[in-house]
Length: 438
Image 1 (cartoon, rainbow, N blue to C red):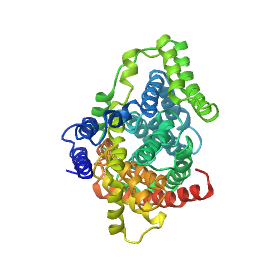
Image 2: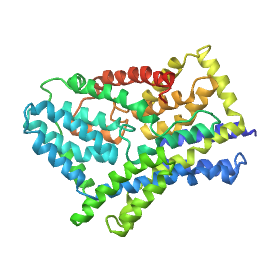
Image 3: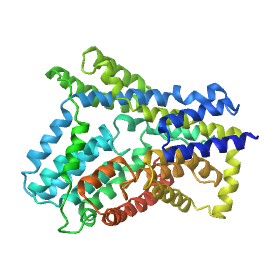
C-alpha cells in the first residue's frame, strides 16, 4: 500500500471520527500521529513533534494565565458594572445592548464562548427586561458576538494564533508566514463591521417583535451545572492576579515583537509568581488548561508533514483542478473554502470543522497557486462563524434553548449578519496582503 493511500485513509477515518464523535475528539486526534508512525509514514519525532512545539507550550502557559484571571474578581466586577451603572444611564436601552455585546466579546476572549454566555445570559435577560429591550434578540446578538470573537483582542491564547497557523504552513512546505499581529489585523476590521451591523440593524432581524417568551428554567439548570465555588483571594492576591494577566499580556506583545522573547517564557514567569503567591494553586492551574485543544492541535498538525512526504499535495492539486477547473482567482477560491466550512460548521462542532479543514485549506491554496494564508484564514473564520443553528456549538444550543427560539427564526435571523461577515472578510483580507499589511 502506498504512503499516499495510507495518509488518505487515516485522514478520512479521522474526519469520520471527528464528525461522528464516537470517541472524544482529543482521543481521535491522538491516534493520528500514532498510526502515521506505525505505518512508517512519519518517524516518531515527526509524528509527535506537534506536542513538543513552542506553539503547544505557549498555549499551555496562556491557558493557565487565563485561569489566573478567572480566580480574581475582575469578571464579577465587570458584570456588576454593566447591570448597575450602564443600565441606569441616559439612553440605557441602546447602551445596555452595546455593553452586553462588548462584555460577551470580552468574556469569550478571556474564557470561552460557552462559559461567557453561562455568565452573561442571566445578566442580559434581567437587564434587557428592566430597560424594555427585546430579550430574545439581545440573547442572540450576544451569543453570535461571543461565538465569533476569536482573534479580536490580543490576549490569552489568541496571542499564539499566528504560531498555530505557521505550524500548518510550515508542515505543508509553504514559504509564507504570519506575524504575531497579522490574525488581529485580518480579523478586527471584519469583526467590527459584523459587530456594528448586528448592533444597528442585525439584532432586529433575530426575532419578530412581540415574540418574547423565553425558557428561564433552562437558564437555572445551566447555572446550577456550571456554578462553582471559587477560592477567596486576599485583596493583594486579587490585584496581583489581575496585574499578572494584563501585565503579562502587555509584556508578551512587547517582548515577542521587540525583543524576540518566546511567549511561553513570559507567561511561565507570570505563572510562577502566581503559584508562589497562591493566587492560583497547582490544581487550579491544571484545571484552566484546555487539554482538548492541545491534543487536537498536537495530533493533527503532523498531517501537513505526512501529506508532503506522501505526495498528497500533488493529489490535492489534481483534485482541485478537476473540481475548480481553471479557477485561480484568489477571491473565488477563498470564498468557496469559507462557504464550505461555514455550511458544514452549522451542523457539526466548529472546533471539529476547523481541525479538519485548516491543514486541507493550506494544501488547496498551495495547489491552486493561491496564498495559503488566505485559504487558511478562510477555513478558520468560516468554521468559527457557527451562528445559524443550535447544532453549530454548545453556546448556540444554550441560547436556542433559553431563548425558546423557533428553528426558522434562528436560522434566518443570523443569515444576513453572517453574509456581512463573509463579504467584509473577502474584501479586507486580500487587501491586507496586497497592501503588505500582513
